[in-house]
Length: 138
Image (tube, rainbow, N blue to C red; front, side, top):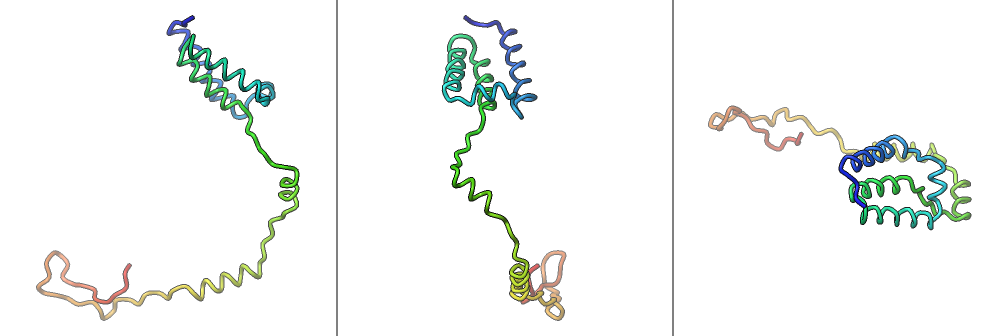
């Protein structure tokens, strides 16, 4: 069974509208249906059948729609979840201020200005007739 080009484009456009407007967040009934691995396998098998027998274009866009609708799997155990909930983020202000003071003390001093290190040369080539010797880089 093959679809005409117009029907393929229409189905593809409808799937594209679904992907753009309805997959974030995906409809709850579809998410609940696709939360089961056997249902995922069946739907992806249907997509493969559509690609083999009907239209590759429709199957490709349908596969993208299915993958975006399948809920994310999070494999957190109960112990890890409890640890994450009980662990609080605290900021030790005295420790941070000491670290900032150390960083300021270790920071390099400002480079000295070129001052008297500027030499004018009469035989220099180009539009600039001076050079900086032993001066700090920019």
